[in-house]
Image 1: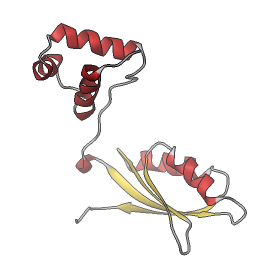
Image 2 (image 1 turned 60 degrees about the horizontal axis):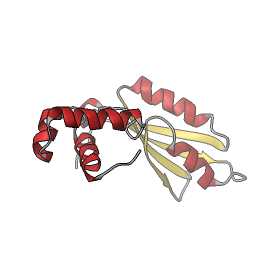
Image 3 (image 1 turned 45 degrees about the vertical axis):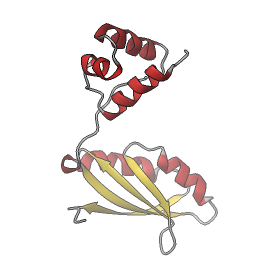
Length: 139
């Protein structure tokens, strides 16, 4: 589907706040609510927009740092790439020291993080993990 500058602006507004009303977006773009609604429907139908989602605020998220050891016969960058695709993984760092990789994970509960860690441990080449739950962000 062809996207014009107006479609891209609509996508930008929805990225910022997927609950923003079509009326409010229309006012910003000098379009009617129905024109915005039609454009969003076309973006969804063409799979340009695949879903609308929410991001949970920091105060409602449990986070963890997971240190990962990789088998010396395994390419660390391949393990890192697989880790980056796991649900709940926010950041992946390749590091020096006792461990090879560290990840920052988050979820709505410790159980959700535990599910992500279980998936992480099943990745070929992962030989050990050490998980630290983050209690509070100071700065």
